[in-house]
Amino acid sequence: MTSQKVLIYGGKGALGSVCVAHFKSKGFWVGSIDLSPSEEANANVVVTRMADWEEQDREIQSRVSEVLNGDKVDAIICVAGGWAGGNAASKDLVKSASMMSRQSVWTSIISASLAAHHLKEGGILTLTGAIPALEGTSGMIGYGMAKAAVHQLTKSLAQGDGGLPKGAKVAAILPMTLDTPMNRKFMPDADQTAWTPMEFVADMFHGWVLDSSNLVNGSLVKLITTDGNTVTEAV
Amino acid sequence: MTSQKVLIYGGKGALGSVCVAHFKSKGFWVGSIDLSPSEEANANVVVTRMADWEEQDREIQSRVSEVLNGDKVDAIICVAGGWAGGNAASKDLVKSASMMSRQSVWTSIISASLAAHHLKEGGILTLTGAIPALEGTSGMIGYGMAKAAVHQLTKSLAQGDGGLPKGAKVAAILPMTLDTPMNRKFMPDADQTAWTPMEFVADMFHGWVLDSSNLVNGSLVKLITTDGNTVTEAV
Image (cartoon, rainbow over all chains, first blue to last red; front, top):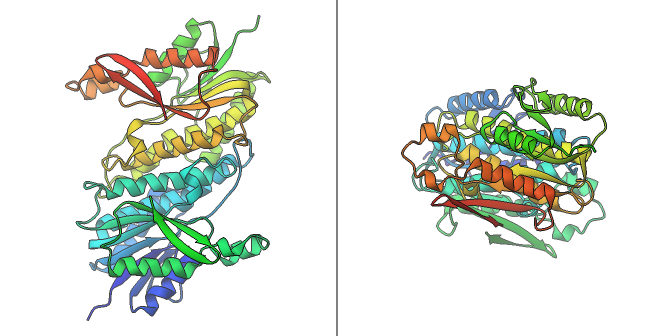
């Protein structure tokens, strides 16, 4: 029996590495796409072309085709991303906006293209948005713009002629704050019982891959954690 | 008496050149930012750095500072933009998304930064969104993402700590289809009585610069044209 396959975009990141481990533990073949190889993944697509979006896309498409060798995947999980602050008066406005665009918009569009070509019919594509970007985000302008773009991409891909394989579904997760080592380091005094455990997210993804019948195509799935308990709310 | 000043980003485009002419006719000093110089403008910032967003920003900031020589402007009108189609299965997905990002997102963020540094208190910044991008846009994925990002940027900048000068207001226009020479050429059989005249838009901008008291900060102003009549609806 051939194992199920999943591609994790950002497989070396905080959430990505948890997802790699989770799907591995469930018997999946896992491919990781990131700037450095994941030791746990079955195969790695290491991104080296950083300057140009089209070049980066060509590199990833070509290497994913090689790694999959004609097989299709059950899911593409894009959890690449990052964070930068700053309002319009920040001297780093464009630098931050550019970084956020590379980390969230480039990766999401490349994931959409990978899904169009390598996802099984009825498969799952997940992208990563953010609750704050549903409104204005004056203190983190580049971040909010990039995440708002990901939200709108999710809606586009869910439309019948969005280009995904037949029966495939797309959803974006919208975290408020994830419980990552970096967030623990930089926000030691924050209320960490309001942070969403990464294992919760990985398990939710796995649930969608096993049975997507309750997942509304194009959902923006808010992750709301209170007193250590996480609930989801799709918008 | 010193004349009022306005910067038109995209002053050589279809809508931009109408705006340059309109503000000139009202006695404004007009600076144009575009890839080639506007003969009608009082001053030109010609963009030559195309490969990198930060380099392009530095070039424009430096040249605008030179041209304004310490003066502040009454308005910054960003009407740069473009259009590209294609869903997720398009071989040009990334190429189109990249072009849309450069034409709409780069220009809008650079305009926001210009506004933070060169706009008068109480001045006006306008950006350019699109009605379709309020929902999914499966047939024009890159376009919709870029415009959704501009909508969210508009909301961020309108917040009190967005970084714009005191009392300044920002709004985005959301056209459906503008009545441009290119659209007439490529859609000769469309219902052109549903297209918004560019002169209407230029006149609306001028009205906002004269008196912004009725303009709600952060508005996304839909331009709805029916039987040749245009009305606006702010969301």
